[in-house]
Length: 352
Image (cartoon, rainbow, N blue to C red; front, top):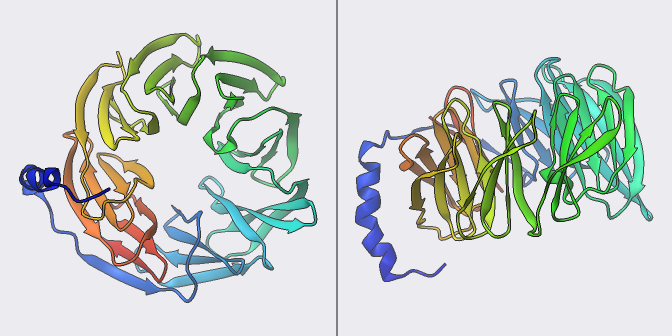
């Protein structure tokens, strides 16, 4: 984005939005010897940080002190999920061998860093993968198949061939996997009987992510339509057109709204009940970066741009604070104590 006169006109507007700011203070900083890579993850009172050399480093969330490291022998971390029920972190790593890619899924005790179990899979080297968790089970989604196992011992209980469009946009809950098939079908797979059913079809290209809240499923397409479907009846409850293609949907737990961002950097609050737009606003950033992540906890929404994190009040849809960094931001998140974690190429910082 280029600096324009419009930005200066908007300064006074955002100053009024920020009138209720609470000043954040930096509570700790951890210097890194290697630049962290995605996927960084937060949970169980810790921050799990993959490094490019094939190491998973763990820091204490409250103090930033290093707790343990696990070396994966040069394997690259694809996905990290937090298994809170069993106190483990699940790490999916990958290693290319010729035209094959070796996936290894490990359950690691969050307190000690000791590996509880591991198993491997061989897939095509160019396949996209995604790790999902639901209850006491995990699911590896690949372009052409899924593999489900329990979180206790890693025992596989389901394997099937599927045609999955963009595995990272799949959603897993209970015995059901929801995924985009090709570019215009939303499909539900019942893992208990291996039956699939088409629950939505459109002539448009499905885009964005799939979100669930209180038995309702939310998703979007490339023309800017947002849809709500009842998970039990599979009936479309409403659809709302916003304009530009949707980047992300956040269901904002414990509120009556979903928050949606589009490619033109507009944010919309939409009623979960009827799909009506209740608020629309545009974010202007001093770093003029693209939105790279979009997360929420309770009444706070964290929007990450290139060198800036914006903290938005979900109820009023106003910017309550902002943090600017010297280096591009790799990851940001809000913890249960409302402590904000920001990861850049050289340091990890906590604000509160």
